[in-house]
Amino acid sequence: MSEVSVPAHLPELIRNHIRRYLESDGADGHMWDSSVVGGAGLVPTLLLTTTGRKSGKPRMIPVVYGKTEAGYVIVASKAGAPSHPAWYLNLTAHPEVEVQIGAKRFRARTRTATGAERSTLWDQMVEIAPLYSDYQTQTKREIPVVILEPHGD
Image 1: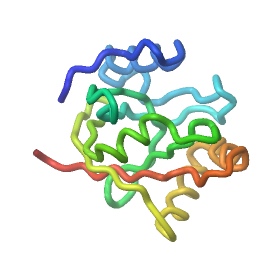
Image 2 (image 1 turned 135 degrees about the horizontal axis):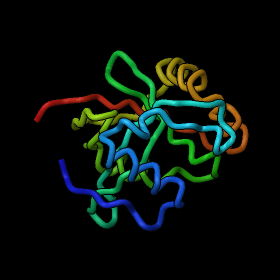
Image 3 (image 1 turned 30 degrees about the horizontal axis):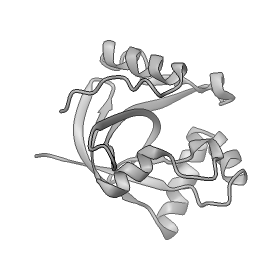
Image 4 (image 1 turned 90 degrees about the vertical axis):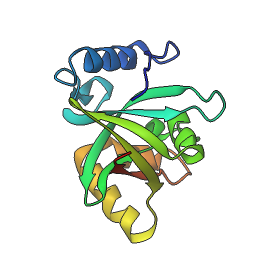
């Protein structure tokens, strides 16, 4: 797995979350209190490392996740902003990512869910993080649902 530093451009809340997650090997940070951003309480988070589409450098971000038959699922909400989050644009350019869930680290291939699969996974993620439903009403874009399929190298 690549060495990644905590990105300075991220808000302090997110930088602290990443730092705690890394320093504790996921013991502090895997379950994140989403109420600090208006959420419903504790949600599971993973650390996602993408390759910057412009810089080629590793970029890390904590993301709420769920489980699926293929692996894991995440949502590119950007809190309902009109544009996709940078991490989503990165993984569309470079679909191979690194993931940390708790102390477990692995590589994964990503793909964006569509159709009935997206609908099912969207509903699952709204159960985990109800704010996603609000975020979708705030934007005209369809918020992407991404599947992370672990693989060995």
